[in-house]
Image (cartoon, rainbow, N blue to C red; front, side, top):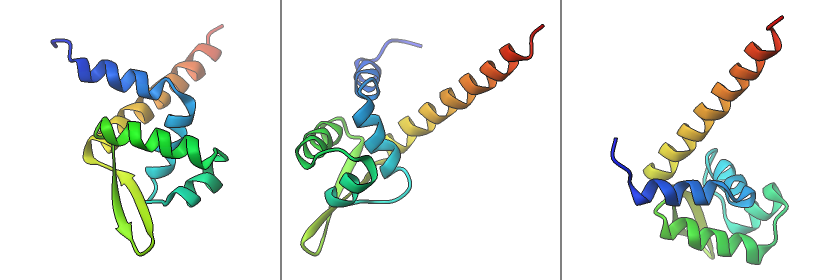
Length: 102
């Protein structure tokens, strides 16, 4: 498989724990910034900055909902988070297998 600069950008994004926390939170349902603050315990300014980066990467979109903006994962964002979950599950399965070795 040829290298894609987009893949490197995804690794850069998920290497920031607070961005990953936002992505996981948005994976369950759309949220406004105030909801994300409650769920992630991050500041409004940090969340807004990260949402801007995530939107620029095509992972998050915003939709106006009355006076608020709701943020949700794009299809690309869902694909990335599915891949991250698969890696986590694989890693956990490997940890279990390693712990069972004599």
